[in-house]
Length: 475
Image (tube, rainbow, N blue to C red; front, side, top):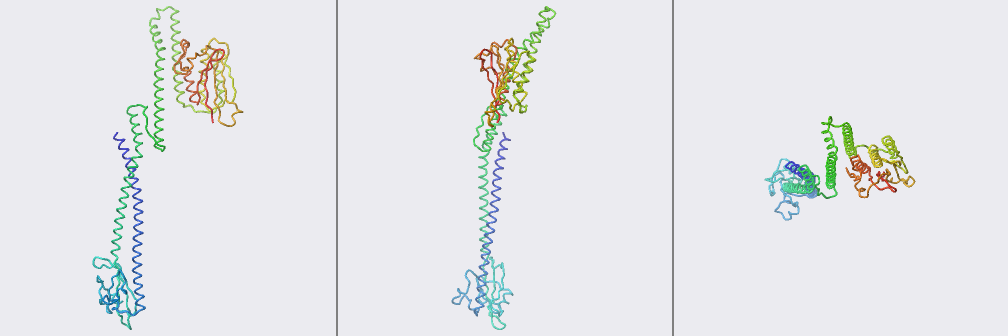
């Protein structure tokens, strides 16, 4: 039980982990691609905006002779010349800070050279400049001048650390969202696996009950039209077949044991008499030996028929295309030699079929031997009639059943015995004094069923019996 639960738990865990792993892989991939695209878009947008600010500033100082005072925060209209969302710091001709930015921006040697340049619109840029705890991108644009001296420069800075903070927050939220999706996928996978394995647990429980109790009649309550449902129904049918097979074997053993007691009891009695054979008269000795021979022969016949019956149930003989009429002719030849009776074969219609030749020959032989036994003193021939469908009426469609009949002029079969004639070990009241085991017609029934047909028995007009079987039609 522990192993079964561990196995099913492992299956559920495998389902859940697999589902969560697939969801995690897809989520991580989508999340990474989404974040990367968003971060790239934001950074490119910020860079483009800063580049436009610098370009506009360069265009303005090139077309207008501007001084550091024009950009001073104390001058009226400074909000027009100062770009929005930027930090502006004004430098003098020597690179000194004329109007500090907020916060104050660092001034490098390159910035001082730009401030002293007489050419307007020259620019130098600095990336990832740390100002306090923030990170800026800084561009220094020259205001130009006259002769060899410049009028100063303007430094424009844009903070990028707030953008990175935004992207980090987006990254954290993306990670949290991915984790939530993975957990939800794992829970859903666990629920789905439990739902899928529920019916498998029922099948496993049924199999364990069969192994523990050895009872094959257990019903398997599995529904659905998917693979698990088909497996459950197949398992249920398999148990039914096994239960029927076990019942057939049990009944065969019981019936065989019952039938074997009579000849064995008689043999024991006669063997006990052999101890006093010297005291018996010669005639009694002859009778005793004859009885022993008869009992041994009947016991041998019973064992042989039991073996034949078991072989007929095994269905190990492969089917092949044959003519049932040819099998009947072979049986007739052997029967004439064994019984000395005339056996005739009548054939009509198409008698070719897919059948097991040995099983078919055994069935027809049993019918002929049965007829010979019950019509022991008869003078009329025993007839074997093999009737197939009319070839002209087949029309290329499905072939009908082939009918095999054995007709005799014996005492016939009583109405009350017709229904039980093919039961194992069943013998009619007027046949119990005759030799036989009651298995011959049971073998006929097994062979007929194995070939898709059925046995039948009727009383013959004018006296006698008609006993036979059908071989199912072939496509």
